[in-house]
Amino acid sequence: MVRSSLPRGRPVAVPDGRSSTLAGVLIGVAIMAAVDEIVFHQLLAWHHFYDRSTPSVALLSDGLLHAAEVIALVGGFFWFADLRRRLALSPRLAWGGFLLGAGGFQLFDGLVDHKVLRVHQIRYGVHLGPYDVVWNVGGAVLLLAGAALIWWTRSRRPGDGPR
Image 1 (spheres, one colour):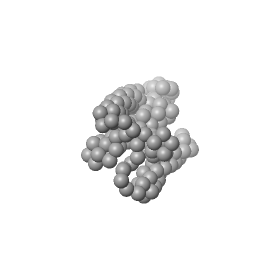
Image 2 (tube, helix red, strand yellow):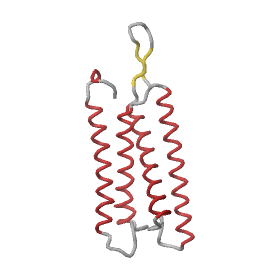
Image 3 (spheres, helix red, strand yellow):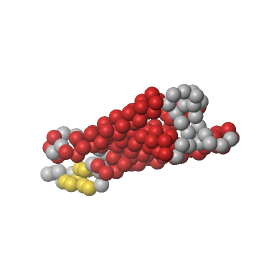
């Protein structure tokens, strides 16, 4: 964190844009992984993280994904809280990072996990086209919204208000 001084000598914190963005990305990835795991793996039971083996391996892979997302979420929130405590948080950049992370996770899952590696599909026994389009377009919209918010926040002049 960089500190500057006000005319009266009181230190004022300068937002740490990079850390704010990265903390948001980590939280966004974790939240989207949790939504995917809870909704599609557990509630709807459409697929597991790794479907190319036995049901026991599929369930184990879901547990490992869930453990990783919880670790990422806790780490992201501690990072976020530390930035906030030090008055170094840029809320808009953190939100941009959150959207970027959520969309990035969804696109990675939709393109790499579903199509390239084929570790699982969104759903089985149905025509995948509409599911793939909604999944990947949704991820792209989140990713682009995050990138736009980050770009807009970084392009503002310092005197334009809070970042």
